[in-house]
Amino acid sequence: MSANLVYVLNGPNLNLLGMREPEIYGSDTLDDIAGMLEDRAQELGLEVEVRQSNHEGHLVDWLHEANAEGAKAVLLNAGAYTHTSIALLDAIKSIKVPVIEVHLSDPMTREPFRHVSYVGMGAVGEVKGLGAQSYVVALEKAAKL
Ligand code: CA2
Image (tube, rainbow, N blue to C red; front, side, top):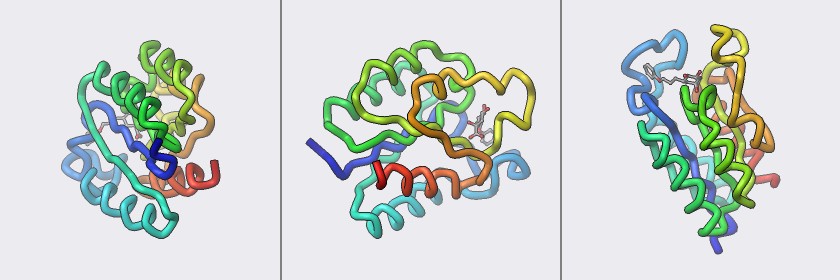
């Protein structure tokens, strides 16, 4: 049981953060975001486990792992899988750990194909449109669960 552990799972292409499209996603890298989260987690008495994969099944496996570990919460930026993945929705619904959906941008203000969120259909909450701060605000929400 890891009641203070928060998994921070990141989907496809988020390994490229800070290197392209800073006008949409900001200039922080995923390592920068991990550092911010580690600092805030320490203040909140939490631990974070930050991971990224370009593979849908890895994200499914990590959701199951968070559940098996008895994690407090999962912050999930599933990238483009947000808008396509029934597998991720099924995984979120199959676990007891609460999942908070996170986005750097606000998908609702972008192309119509980003307006559907399968992740959001299972998540307990959502933080979007704040750049890297979306993750920090989501961690603060997780602390209150
Ligand atoms: O705003 C977000 O956090 C998104 O989840 C980012 C996804 C996008 O498909 C979602 O609609 C919203 C895309 C992540 C792509 O990451 C890149 C990072 C650097 C350069 C290019 C893409």
